[in-house]
Image 1 (tube, rainbow, N blue to C red):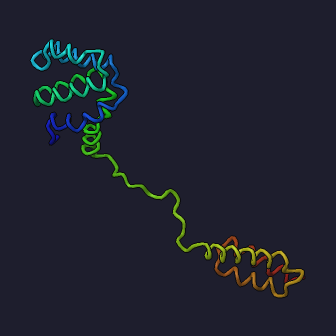
Image 2: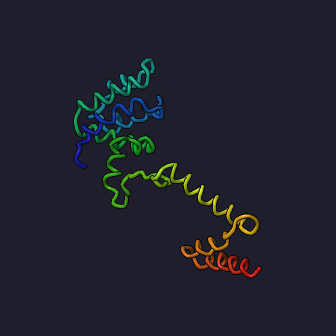
Image 3: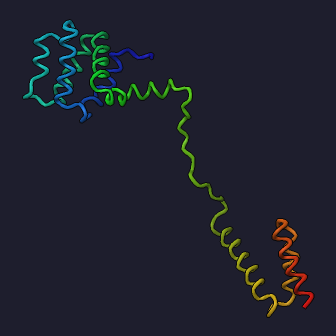
Length: 180
């Protein structure tokens, strides 16, 4: 683990003060847990002070956390135990717990964010050139019989670099135009 419970509580205290899930009722449950089960950590007088409803919950919680840090390692550990018992979702979302979980999970994949779609890096002129070539071939194919002389021979030559099915179609078209 590395960090002591006191150091973890120092790190988590800002998160605990700001978390809205720790309302008055849950803060009172934590205080009563520490007071009833561990009276050496939180005496009756201290528990009454931290349960004062005239003081906002975030202030009371901040004072409680400071008090527990002053009490020492055992008090901080028991606070974490009470938090885990009563408010499990807050316990597992603590910054120190998240860091601990991420560092100890052997199956965790490191967070490497890749681009979703990898496009070529040749730029827009390459795209326009390819598009222009494709339009030219389409026009050549469309108008080859009527107006462009030797267009079918050009299609036959273009077939050399293509896959087998496309090559057969283009060669068939070339041979058919010669027969007419």
